[in-house]
Image 1 (cartoon, rainbow, N blue to C red):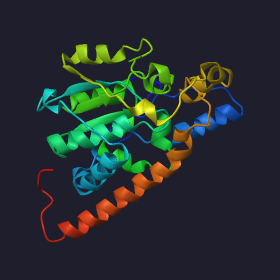
Image 2: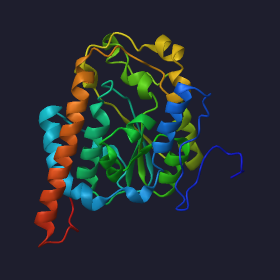
Image 3: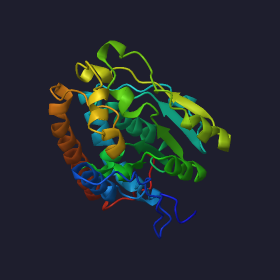
Image 4: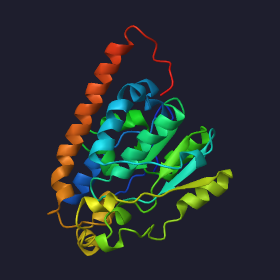
Length: 271
């Protein structure tokens, strides 16, 4: 890797997301602070024991809160690297990643390596650090490549923030905004691509506009890789903080309960 390569590699070999080098000023200062807080994509942070302890309680929450129903996991290869490509829904509180990650680990077992790519702002959002223990890493081509090369299953959402904020009348439409990097990723490694299609997430709010012009005017695409800025007066925005807190509380409660239960028994058991 050349000295002028924007990627930074830590001593453990973890790759940090590329630097965006925004201009000076308030926006640039905020962007730098966000970049500095993005954790390196250390694949070893995924914790199968933690997943085993917290999975039952979190799946119960997902089943009742989101009424989650996941089907067709038998179409995913039972072992080895595979690229899972999904459509993204739900605005600022997208349930699809959360639900599918739980279902995948329940079906294949917590020991199967599985990573999900997420926006930089998700990685720095207060209280969501526990997601890294489930295998969530910053969305970057290099991070996906490292996980696939390690033989893991990797979940990507090419549409990202653009797709998850699509208008409500387009709730049944899959729109990756012409993003095709995942195809090259799979072709380079001759890996299978398994589509992950979700429906219902766009019902969490009334989505009227993506706010693309406002995002460009505020240069959010340059500072934070945000291509949208939808109106904030939506149910999902007001519920987001409460739901995040509930997920954190549930994860801590499940982990504590699992530790108490495992004090007299081995954790080496299938989910």
